[in-house]
Length: 232
Image 1 (cartoon, rainbow, N blue to C red):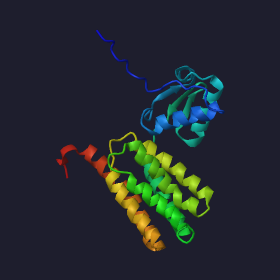
Image 2: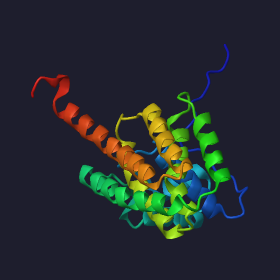
Image 3: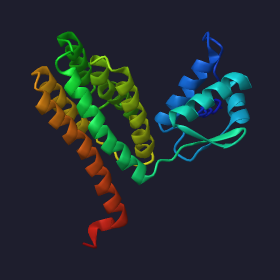
Image 4: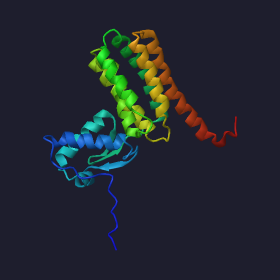
């Protein structure tokens, strides 16, 4: 009888190939959280996780502290953490702030962004087909939404947008709501307006995109409260 295949653990050992093991540990844990492998509310004990990843406590602690600072984890005890859960109210407050920040980013970027940069962004967007997994879509989405602030040379604005996106991601990874095809189309509308150097149209397309995301969440919440649509 052939041996039965063993299931692979969600958390795999890390090997000390990187110069900075703290950075490697941080990157690995961050991807586990953002890829839904460690959903909101999951307990993250420092010692047990260090054993799983086969790293010492020092790089593990460095990684966990960075993730707390980024808003992905929250400390529960001196040696334990938990993946942060984002409330509905926090999600909508975050999205309202993003409306302001990302429209400012577009306005600043339109006269400064190069044709070559826009061509690269379009190429990657077109290559991101519907068969790609959720994490691939999110990684491009993250690049897309920080792209315009960085193109404008505004690093602080780009970093703030990225932090707000982390909040939105934490909220959305706890739900079954995914709409990559619609999102790709909305991204294309934004990009086409920037390619025309039409700042007003680009801002309007970005605003439509961000508000559609919020409307999707409202519809999902209403459907959950009223399954089958029996009550009106």
